[in-house]
Image (cartoon, rainbow, N blue to C red):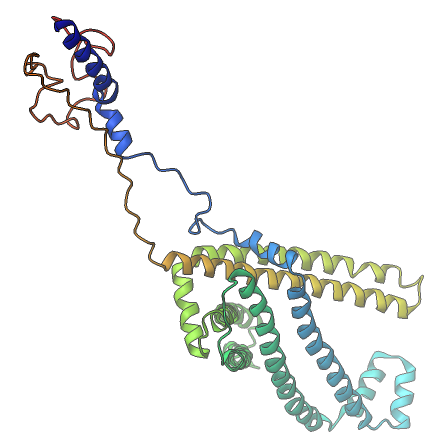
Length: 402
């Protein structure tokens, strides 16, 4: 009887010690270590890479951007050429002017040109009054349609369940009209800076250096303000298409977005601006090469090569612009995901196993004096994880004194 009770006690003590001797095992079971989720939607975005990836995987977005920009550019060149042809057709060239032009002397040529263009200023002003608003209106319409097409494709790719909101094109037209007004205000500001700088110089006491010294800071200030506001207006169409905001609502949303994610958007603008600058330097260098061999090839081929180089540069610039818009959209998607409240997840709790209570036959000895089998409650959380509950006792060994 005593041997059976001793064996049962040793078995229970081994099982208990293997499970509950070290409280750190219980803590690990109740609070398992959390593993990082590799598919966490709130991970920081990589907007530059995401922008290039979006254009690479869906090149139709780039071709749509190229279509509306080059359509407006072709129409502008055509209308400007026709207006220039009509203007030149109204000029009167006398035989005296022809004789002066054939002399090829600088003074004779300048006198002939002054006589030819004398009195044609009102026609130039009237042509500009008609042509510039027409081109601006065409740019607003084509730009709104083209921007809606490109942004709709980008947003649909980033958010498959996205649904287009009505009124987006009307809001885009309003944003493009504001950009036109901003360009006009910038031009008038440059003229105003020139007028202010001219006050420090007179005919009697000319100060060209001081005038230039005053004009350059004013021009830099005007350029900085214009570029900042123009960048904000170029960012607002994302919220017009993505969230269905109106013209001024999109501007307010873009301003709030830049306050939250100003560092990320500035980084995207910096890297794409640097790449655009590199493309410009390369294009400006390569476009000179046909001029170096202009004496060896016909002039028509020289102009054709220069035109092809310029078109390639414009295509690269448009590609970088669309990739930058896609990068901004990636930051917007990440910002929208971070603003959503995450769902509350209850922590997993693993309860310790319940030891079976040995049957009481009435003849066995109740071990109330042992700490392991005591009926008194004992807090395991207060014990040190590095030390067992019973010093000098290890699993598998008989209890002291048994």
